[in-house]
Image 1 (tube, rainbow, N blue to C red):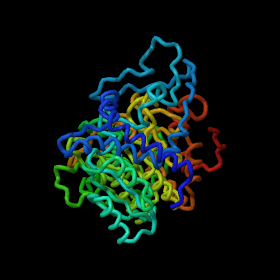
Image 2 (image 1 turned 60 degrees about the vertical axis):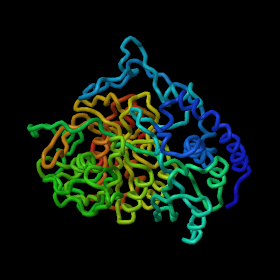
Image 3 (image 1 turned 90 degrees about the vertical axis):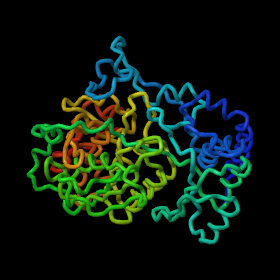
Image 4 (image 1 turned 135 degrees about the vertical axis):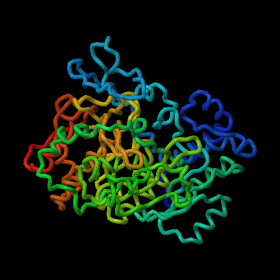
Length: 508
């Protein structure tokens, strides 16, 4: 593969950086403890193995993405007039509100945050998304995406040359590339890591990023179902004829899996994929995916937005050895690839994590095939960095509101936010056959995905851009006039989206 002069210079510069890493890794880890995953030094023999983790985990990704990092510029803070601050929903069970600008009533004007202050002043910190101190990537494995068209022999020779241990290997049809999940080599020197990352057979070498469900806490059981689904009045579903059901539309929930035997979802799941066919039940928990799916397609016990949609379940989340429900970019892309290959028209991604070019490329290919991608904005509050995949340009980013149209207090903010939907204390399927209330941008995302399924049922010819334009002008504007970083365009009115195609275009 031909390389530009810039890339060659970047590689040379990184070689120096990797050498310096040997002496400064411990100091950097001490200065920024949230930046580096927790590591057990005893699990890697020799001193080089311990130092290599930050060198390879951060270093090899810089090689392929150094031009992107160069383009990140400091953005000026915009001021939001005090009279137009968003009304924030403070309904949040089981968690004390953190101190955010919305809580500082002594100020007359709250700053409008586009990028978090911490990233503007702590320039040495990598631009990552951290969730409550959980690891942002694996400390045991990394991902290598190989060039298109490599033979099996070429792949075997590459692995043998660098003495790499393959944990898993797959072909991503969306990208037409072989992808390897590899164990961090304990004895590989930084120089060898650099050679591997710049090998002509390698398209990209990067950390195996982690993503977490964008939902807060477990569903709270409730015996009072009547009147709890306020979203149906808020979003205009109650005004529809009742014939709209999403029939004939395929919607993939890329999540923790779905309890297809839950009474609310029996016969709703038409296709299933799991990234963990050998995992035992202790490693898996399908609660989050089931809650999301019930908002979309429940047909008993509670009302789903699109009860006859064909649900596709891509199980990519499981418990880590530290007890977190987590998915890595390798498995997420496998799930997305499977869903698109099997005809998914909508992808519901109710999770959040770091920026990842591997995942971004896969979603870009999905959009080229006409697939609509909807993702949760995240639950880390107004000062948090933008969460991905929601912040990618080709993804519809969804934030959450309550029954009074107040903004969920822990929702991420940013100019990428497009739509709002109910996500505070919403009714979901929970347990083996019960129901409960749950909060988070994950839940709001499901309402948008279900609404899109209804739109496609009525007008199958709608393109991705048609859908986005229709959604953008079918809203109740809740924040500042026009699109804003809190509510996006506003809270979706599904009745308008389904019954009107002549509304004026909205301006960003």
